[in-house]
Image (cartoon, helix red, strand yellow):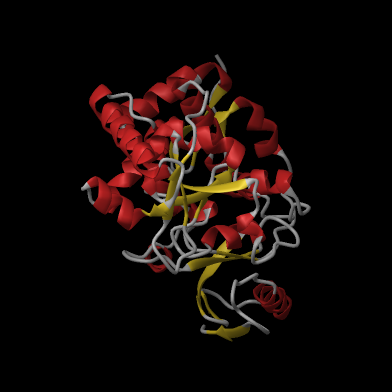
Length: 338
């Protein structure tokens, strides 16, 4: 039996950028939207998913998130996510609890919501009042694959129901795990369970079921697993890393625990990026997170952690100017706060 593959920090970060389409943008189109959303796009901050698409797809427009090939749902950890419509079963049924009591609760709530709406839609607040439940409880019906939402950040989410997917929840769970491993790998069952918002036992079970398609690896933060088919990409020479303004909750830094240490080794900087409340965006330059950014209307404020070259600053300024912000007319104003 061969020794586990050892992967370095640069190899891991280069892999994640490459599979995440952060080194070079994809051509505009629905195939690229799906690839950009391969592990879902968190949309808990208004239009974060749109800016995540922009970081990965050429020509992204303020309305791109509304493309008919995309859909919103309460996805991993019951947060708002944008995913490819055809992948709805993966991000819903893939999280359906194995526990019979919890599954029954989700299915009963989904059935009540479906009967209430009867083909119509309403705000989740109104639906909650009609059903006599806290509106936030409606999130627990989402893993049935029958509940979708639309949230533009300004008002309450609109909710409606769709026919149940004809997919085995077990198969959806395994596909969700494969996608997590591909985008966030190397990974552990515990990290997958925390990201997906499922039980530790369910996370372990998914990795066990995939064992024949996984390769054990050693990383600077401990032992983990990768998809065997991804090994050649980990070994490939790194590509030039383009600057990106990644929004709050972007998949590249949607991390917990030791994975945060790998991405940002400095503890003080980690506290600046992963704050107790609303996270800022991450500034990615030359393959490293080198600062944070926030936006207020048409003004983008960037706080850097180290001095950037003139060429790097010019590239970041061009990136900021290209942000497709809905409702913002005219040029983006950029402020450097270093």
